[in-house]
Length: 242
Image 1 (cartoon, rainbow, N blue to C red):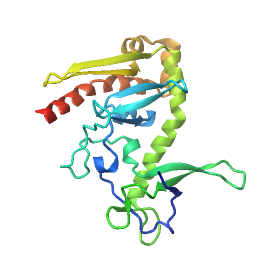
Image 2 (cartoon, rainbow, N blue to C red; image 1 turned 90 degrees about the vertical axis):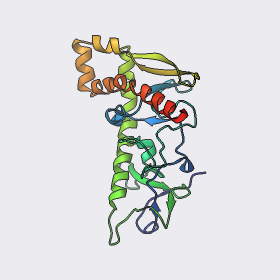
Image 3 (cartoon, rainbow, N blue to C red; image 1 turned 180 degrees about the vertical axis):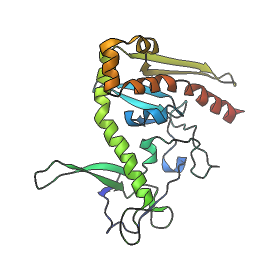
Image 4 (tube, helix red, strand yellow; image 1 turned 90 degrees about the horizontal axis):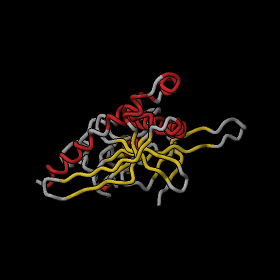
């Protein structure tokens, strides 16, 4: 169970956090949540797909990391970071940190604050990156984490509107992904959705202008472009099996 507490430079002055990735840290997962604020970076490395939550009837975005549950094809124990890609999804890269909403007794708007899971496997006092500078202030690592949490926080705030506009313009369609590995093993990835590239290309006039003004046009194209990364996953899997 997580032990999430508000991060502060008094109680946590000596804490250090590992910025390395590996199965031992729970990073061996087949997909992670993805956020609109990182689509442009994600599409360079991973397939971006949509999932429909049948309970809430809302869509959410994921970055596909593997072809099976519990399989992250980007983990690389031989690299310094443990991750073989130039961009790491924010949901993973943030490590043991999360945004918590702090109530304001003054009646002002609630404030988003950085929290940390003290029981996370990457948290300790010996190895890793310091969170605070010796004479006060945030360390460069903690500033990096704060930027990642901002990506997530702003992405969560914009994703409902993004999906509403995509649906309004009839751009979302189901996609079934079928392929064979060199070993002869057959795969079928179902239950996902993507952007209909043909309908996106046919948008014009007010619809195209609206999508562009809201900033969702490059995101839609990032999703369609990301689908070529499925071949990358297949190639990595084939190399691992050879």
